[in-house]
Amino acid sequence: MTTVGILGGGQLARMLALAGAPLGLRFLVMDTEPDACAGQFAPLLVGDYRDDTALAEFASRVDVATFDFENVPAESAQWLSERVPVFPNPRALAVAQDRLEEKTLFRRLGIPVPEFAALSSRQELDAAVAAIGTPCILKTRRLGYDGKGQFRIRSNDDAGPAWEALGAQAATVGLILEGFVAFERELSVVAVRGRDGEFRAWPLTENWHVDGVLSASLAPAKVEPALADIAFAHARKLADALDYVGVFALELFCRDGELLANELAPRVHNSGHWTIEGSETSQFENHLRAVLGLPLGETRMVGHACMLNWIGELPDAAAVLREPGGHWHDYGKAPRAGRKVGHATVRADSGEGLVDVLGRIGAVRGRDAQVAPVVVALRG
Picture 1: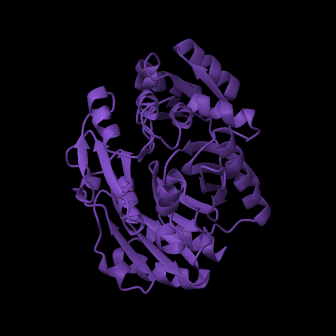
Picture 2 (picture 1 turned 120 degrees about the vertical axis):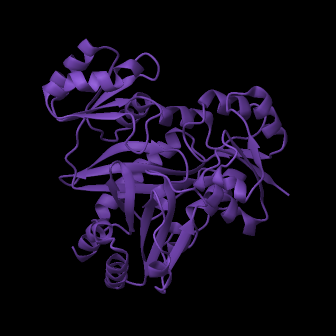
């Protein structure tokens, strides 16, 4: 029986383990925390990702390794890859961990990106702000996610506070300034590439964020087919350039009919959670198929789907579960402000049907603000 090792024991690892059970797979999860929620469904090895002894034990007990988050040290992934197959490869992980490397690769591949500049001093920040213009965003090159490690600069007067907030990290994780994109829509391509180079993508997804954290996702996004084709072409070009194996997400801004790449997530992705119930093959199953060298599953949709993210604490499940297309996912985490503790997916055979279901859920749960933009998009 094949054992899949997962570095990171959060909800993504948990859902990978659930998806792998029908395939007859076993799992070993490694995480730094003893209460990692994936440990409720798979054996958990607690250890530091930079500890060679812990990594050696992990490698000795698995047949193939993957990740559930992108901040696993690339050096650890490289160390593991010399002992056991690792997918996606350490290079892809390293590129996605560094916003400068990532944006540089996008530009080299002809994928449009906002203006950007690397910097390491307050003087370089002032020069970059002058060159790029305001508004712009100062970000750490590494480790930031879900809106963390960022400071929006609305005018030149904000450069000082931005440097006070993030400048100390210039020497450790590096800093990058990016032009602010006044986008109309946030979109994502969730795609999968197999060991043999086969590429498939799920329908384009539209996303809404609150305070930098995903709030809701709608699939399929209501866009012109030509725009979706461009998004898929960008994703395929990126996957081939990195010799990528597994599922990934390419996050995109849409502005004036043009797509600008925001970032690459080298893993199964929050905006693809709807695929569990809303597609022929979920992102989790296809990720496992890819890393094991199995044939990829169909990515076509089953109707229309919306994913609602639960942050901080879970609402009452009844409003979702009483709907015929309502599906509930509790991650088994203790409530905490800002923490992803679960999600719901609502599926319907038509966009009109999905509008009706979301209206009922929003009214019962007082989630009108969360579902309103999705309903507007569906009606538009």
